Length: 458
Ligand code: SF4
Image 1 (cartoon, rainbow, N blue to C red):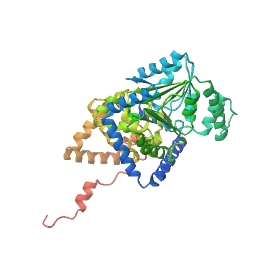
Image 2: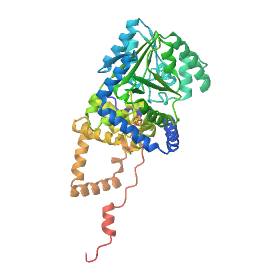
Image 3: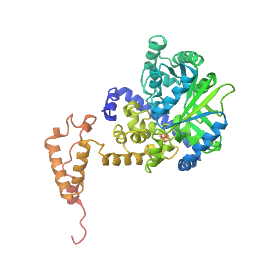
């Protein structure tokens, strides 16, 4: 079974890469901090965003219907998908109806979640990811490792080698400008040849029926404007009530994601251009189930900025692929067990519960509390594995009885002093990455009994 710990072990083999990955993401986190601190009303913005999302989630049914009504009135085709399979079928049927063979796609974590690329490629459709980072990982047959920076686990040398193999650039080339230009030329041809453009959705406005797509490369616009058919795929939680609410979310999103004041392109799509066709696919895929879980409902406020990834000490040093799910990091570890508790039972444990994720989240999701709550549910449902379940029962017996606790403490100390190899061996995962501390000469309790100031009369 794939687990975060096993996958992280692979990533951790290359220590230099781990350090570099850690430093790079911390740099992004610091950029985010500077941007946030430049806005005196930052905390009010976070609170406002959280309240808007809270209100929207409480009235999601009404806002979805309002959005559909407005979008239909704008001449957009609206589709509803209960799960990933339905979503993929809807997209495929639109492509089939037109007899198309080639599509371009801008970044959409929803389509990653639904494994749309694999599905369409198996049907014989050419699918080209047009976000630069996404295209790099697509050429390497890898999933993205980060929701905003999909190729952040790769160095420019890796990209140079990938482009040399697939795009015919010079062997050993690693100049970012040269490589980006090569990607630009390559993608231009794909944009021009594409029959259909697929995009994600950052925000869908119930009041107008319009959608907003944020990119830094303009690739969503380029695809949607050149192709005759545009499909926008969105999770149902992307709804916001009013156009005016965008002013709150657009200010928070780019600052939290990359430390920019605004994304380079915040593109508004309202209706198809004359003679063209526009579709919106609204996808549930477990979201209504999550909405019904009172403890995890807030996770649907997420605007996918990845600030919680960049600050997480576990993510930074284990890499996105170790989470073995489309949305990695702290928020992914809350969303994934909702879809498959057994398969993703390891993820809520891939956290120090330090709370840094909750502190940076622009919509104030209580991320670390939810991770802790998942751990309790997973233990109750028997998804934590025999070793952990037995260990926890033993710990519970030891910690709830002072006599047993004292006996185990003094025995453990004796063994640490006289047979240190019992702890310092490769079977102890904690020891693998650390030096064992010198065992103290006496326990704190013994020291305290000897040194405490006795109250008068004792
Ligand atoms: S949980 Fe919060 S910090 Fe993490 S991606 Fe979502 S909005 Fe950003």
